[in-house]
Length: 121
Length: 172
Image 1 (cartoon, helix red, strand yellow):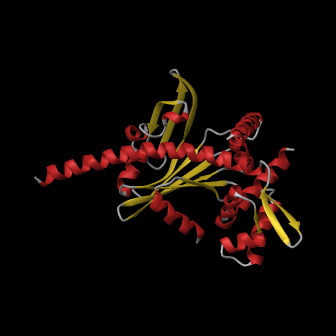
Image 2 (cartoon, helix red, strand yellow):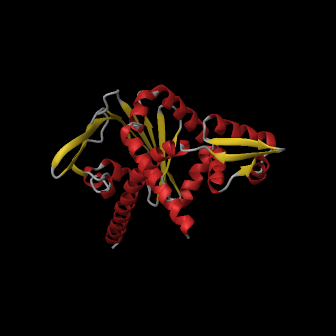
């Protein structure tokens, strides 16, 4: 069970390592789209976008369904949340730290300015 | 090439980005509006580190902060609540290259030693900071990600929240 979850996480992280694929997920978060829609939006060939969607589908992040000649892509249920929730928690910690660091740096810069002026005088 | 593109974006927006780059590695990127010299100083002087390493949102306060930023020097951050230490992070500095590079070990984990590498790259008065966390094994990363009851509980709550949001949206 744990191995299964861990394999799935690996596949998901690999799928998420590409900016186009992250873009596709963002897009599908807003609305379902066909392969043709996605190819147009990301300025790619049908073959190119199919490859990306294939990787996302294997990782369980996206589900596709062919009706007639149109293949529609939808976000897979719950998969994305597991990975992004962890990364997002991690990001939030660093972001909060770095906001505090911004303040420290601003103060150091001001101090240097004042000291620089004193030295010049 | 993609990393470079993302770095440029990060430069413009001052946004913190976190990415998993391999089975064992995570990378955090952020740009600071200050020269590398000052950013480096804020990462190596305990009196400065103390002021930003434990932001309020972390939920634990920094009780002690000992930092000897020299090759072979140690550091130790003690965190706690209500004055009692609950957890400590500690290790040694492997590389200390003023204004450009810091490497230290993280020795608190049971699953082995993780290594953190921070690089400071100055560009037009701003500093691009790249922090790499290399974990000892994939298992250690899985542990860090901590999918377990706690996480499942969180997702359960998230599901409830989403259901509530969905219901209120339909009501509108």
